[in-house]
Amino acid sequence: MRYFLEVSYKGTNFNGFQIQNTGKTIQGEIQNALLKLFKDPIILTGSSRTDAGVHALQNYFHFDIEGAFPMEKVYNLNSMISPDIVIKRRVEVGAEAHARFDANTREYKYYIHQSKNPFIQDTSYYYPYTLDWDKLNAATALVLGRHDFSSFSKKNTQVNNHFCEIFKAKWYWENEQIVFNIRGNRFLRGMVRALVATMLKVGRGFFSLDEFKSILAAHDCSSADFSAPGKGLFLVEVAYPLEVITPS
Amino acid sequence: MRYFLEVSYKGTNFNGFQIQNTGKTIQGEIQNALLKLFKDPIILTGSSRTDAGVHALQNYFHFDIEGAFPMEKVYNLNSMISPDIVIKRRVEVGAEAHARFDANTREYKYYIHQSKNPFIQDTSYYYPYTLDWDKLNAATALVLGRHDFSSFSKKNTQVNNHFCEIFKAKWYWENEQIVFNIRGNRFLRGMVRALVATMLKVGRGFFSLDEFKSILAAHDCSSADFSAPGKGLFLVEVAYPLEVITPS
Image 1: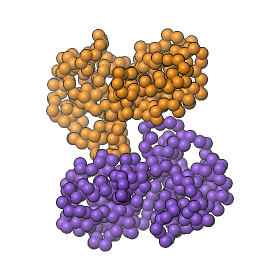
Image 2 (image 1 turned 180 degrees about the vertical axis):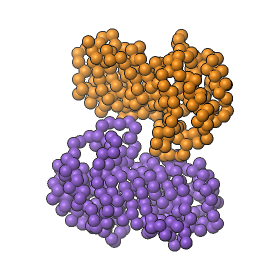
Image 3 (image 1 turned 90 degrees about the vertical axis):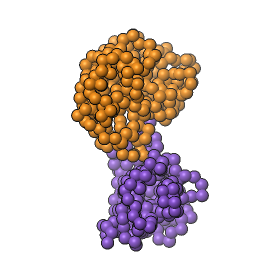
Image 4 (image 1 turned 60 degrees about the vertical axis):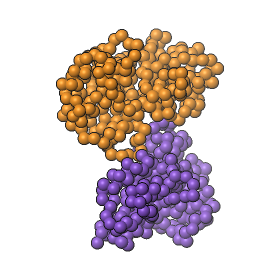
């Protein structure tokens, strides 16, 4: 049977979501526990590959298993894996459901604080500079809709299609933090952090709005070679069509 | 001139507030930076000595210095000390003002979470057991007012007076966490954590309300030999009479 696992994690102590040759990963940590639990290797397919230090309030895996995967096993899993990761639920899905390909939107939040704060060091970027909100908002408006985002993608990614459709993008204050919130059908590798870093340069006056437009229009991964630190970034939601989540 | 320093800190990486023979302390960290800044040793007198792992949203020190201590020096201090500590302000006070003796109330919050949560591991106690809120509230009512709290004090404390007056004590839900909130004129060493641990035993049914009453009445530091972990505890406010904070 095929299951989706909903997970949340603090990425600080991990070398990202997907298994790598070196370092602890979210996927590796959960697969190791599943191996102990079922005495059989289980391969997870993730929805969204977050980078080192990036967090998730919600992310999904799918995997196949013979027989059922009861909630008791989820409790077991949670007690076996790092306190940095929590499995929130497991959903039985159809045999064709795919955590990555079936997801129709992903939503991210990037957190920034402007005064020293000991309690959010791992989950927010300390950026104590004055920002011009009019410029920030004007740049943000330019990314809405369907665009080729190659300029905000990491070099050497093996993707052919660089088009993403952005449904929502906005900057606002949430309590004592500044948030950049973006939702789209898909994101290229490093795209949110490159957008944040480049927009911050616009907000500080280092780039004009026209320069921002040119970078977006260049469709060249070397044109926006900036990246905001991973620790400020949260994947907050991955959404699926109802028929994927509801087994037939 | 005498100054009060208002500080906030995440206690996770410190062996408490007050300088010890071993380990990093909040006081030690700030004094080291002051020594570098003024080339002269400056001794801080703290308001409330938090234990290892305990946090503060607000705590105070006083110290004496020749000449003035402008806000620029506060900015310098903040850039020199650990990201776990922030100096929030400095207040010039009268020559007799005393951070410890003049404080007339202290307020603490103890945070508990009942579902695994990767983001509050350092600042909340994971306690996934069912609690009887009626019993919890009944025990809480018993600590209001003026009592000898010897039973909830650590052994070997060098205090003669064990009376504390409790103005507020309550349990409630705050978002996804349970909070024990207590305000009093003073607290004995380890008192809040001993109260929390003992009340949790009442809430789970391990102690009756009468047993809780007997422990409080025993006035014996070995009668409630329980302690909730430091990481859930926050000193949230230290209050002074207006005439102390306002220099004459």
